Length: 166
Image 1: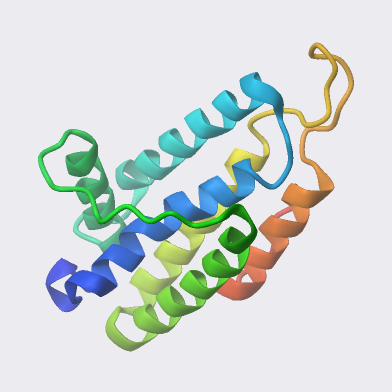
Image 2: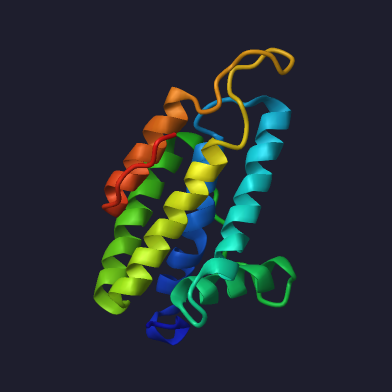
């Protein structure tokens, strides 16, 4: 298994930021309204952190989640903030996913690569399912919009994983 020591600071930052970037891309894929956005952002935080509890002890995902928690608790400095225009978020995310996959193939173990990719896919799938889209005062709508479904499929494709049914 690989650890933080196997990666440069830039590589570690890529692995660290990509799950949240993927989550934000799903949240912004379709308008959910303020309550839906809150539900989806809450799901993002929970899913990212829950992976640390279910991941292999001492594995890459566990180390990443430990750092994410430390950043949230201000025990570690946050990575440099980036302003990514909305229209550039999806292409940038897909490129980050390609880079992370290549990086893990080169420096990580197959188990680390698989758990990282599955972590990302689980996060985005659960965010997509967190709130209905297109409701009017809570009525109607659909659990997962076509835009969210398409983005989850694209993410799964880039990661080389089977797309979940959403």
